[in-house]
Length: 132
Image 1 (cartoon, one colour):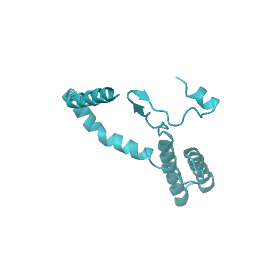
Image 2: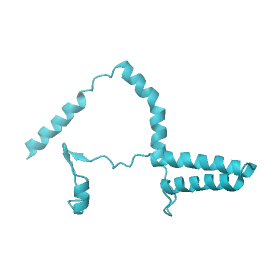
Image 3: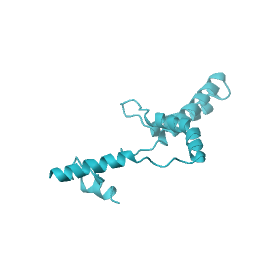
Image 4: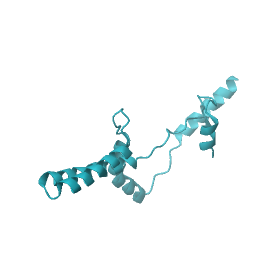
């Protein structure tokens, strides 16, 4: 048993001493230019709506309703124009929020194998839906 542990420690230390190859300049420039956009996208992914059940779909419907009602009822008044502009802004914001990626956290690995802390307590529907 101690030999196996010692061997694994030596293996890990050997892997620490090897550095990955340097990425090409073109790839580093591309990644550097895209980093601010990725940061903005990640920040949008962390935006949480209020906890009273308001979803981006609800915001989309409300914005469309405001736009239509302001157009039909207000005609060409100044208040109707501002309501239409506000509805368009809310619609675009809700659309961007609806595009957020709904992904699961990355899978945890231990020695190259997936680490399953939950066991197999999922329902048959979850196992069917997430099969690969």
